[in-house]
Image (cartoon, rainbow, N blue to C red; front, side, top):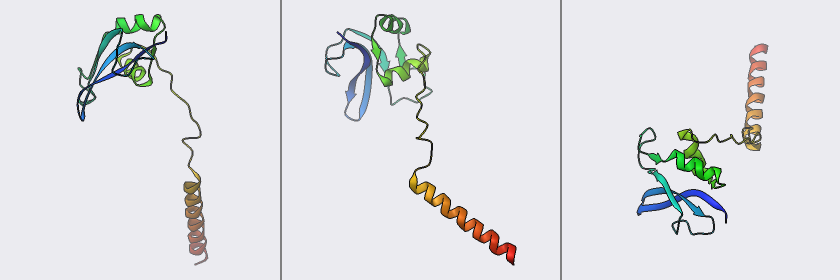
Length: 121
């Protein structure tokens, strides 16, 4: 049985409200769960104290038992200082794409041409 610490959606249409739960990974998103660890209200301000209310000790205990937090829950736990999430590295994402490189080359060529024209004059 693979356990996940994940979000279970509640609330009304266009007004989401999530419970942080420990559930078997085979259960539906809003289905049966083992234990409720806390709540997450995405509509509250990011600096609001009650945006994420979580029992950190229970979360640590479930992680020690082998429960895997989902990506979003791992971000929430990292924000609360419960776990340390390692940053993902994708070095090619920061580099400019093909069109941007062509535009940069065209601007550099135009700047060189303008500099050469002003030097001759």
